[in-house]
Image (cartoon, rainbow, N blue to C red; front, side, top):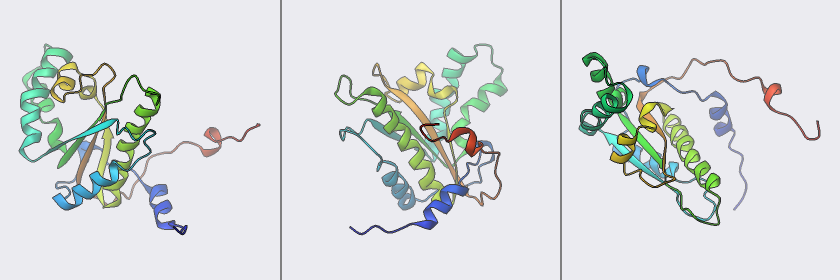
Length: 197
C-alpha cells in the first residue's frame, strides 16, 4: 500500500474543537452517518485484538426514557437526596441536550497478558475517535463524563458491572456546527521536550 499524505486531516485536527452539550445545535446524524461514525470509532489501536470496550447508543425517545428511568432516580438516590424538583428535571433531561449520546464502556479482559492500562487506553481511543469522526462529518460534539460516568446505578443500568469495567465517557453529538471559535490551548514549548534535555 502506498503512503499518501493527508494534509486535510492534519489541518482538521489542528482546528478541531468541542461544542459544549449545553450549546448543541438541534439535530444529529442520520442512521447511515451514525453507522459510519461508529465504524470509525472502533477502528482504534487494540493490542491483542480484545475489543475491550462497548458502545451504547441513545437516540430518539431512548434519551428521555433513560433520563426518566435511570438518571433521575440515580441522582436523587446517590448524588443529592435533597434535590429540588427543578434539579431532578434537569438531570432527567441530561441526555436530551444532544440528538445522539454514545456511552463508551471500558470492558477489559482481566487477567490477560495485555496490561489493563493498555486496554483502558484503547477505550479512551474509541472516545476520541468517535469525537473526531462526528466532528469530521460537521456535527457539534463533546466528550463528557460528569457524575453519570461514576454513579453505581447508572453503571448497573449499562451493564458496566465487571470489577474493572468503567464508563470511559459519553460522546454527545448534536446538529451541524461551524466550530469557528476556540479556547486557549496549552503552550507547545511547555509540554513538548526532547530527550535528553
